[in-house]
Amino acid sequence: MALADMLRDDGHRVEAFDAPSSVPPLESLGHVAVLVTDYQLPESNGLEFADAFHTAYPSVPIILVTADPCSHLDGAAGSRPYVQLHRKPIDYRTLNASIRKGLAHDRVR
Image 1 (cartoon, rainbow, N blue to C red):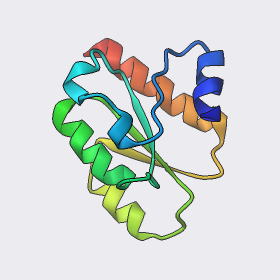
Image 2: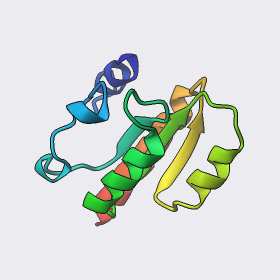
Image 3: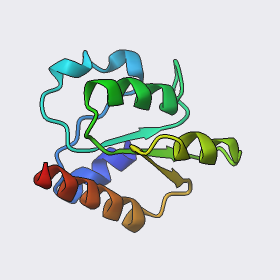
């Protein structure tokens, strides 16, 4: 949850969950501007979660972070225009710029 703390320190409102099963029903979350998720999740993977999230919130940008070096993720994420892939180790400035871009997209909607 260190990333959540850094985002909060930068003034973002953050809801953080340890696993997909701990996320309340997506429709009950209310307004969501940007989703940041890891690829390695306890019960599934971040792409599966991104797909489910995208169904509930089709206009919300999704940032997927991963330490997985496999190139299959490039194609899998690339085939989902709503997913932006960031490799670990995360460059926080680059990630924060992507989040801010998503927030700007949210203001336009």
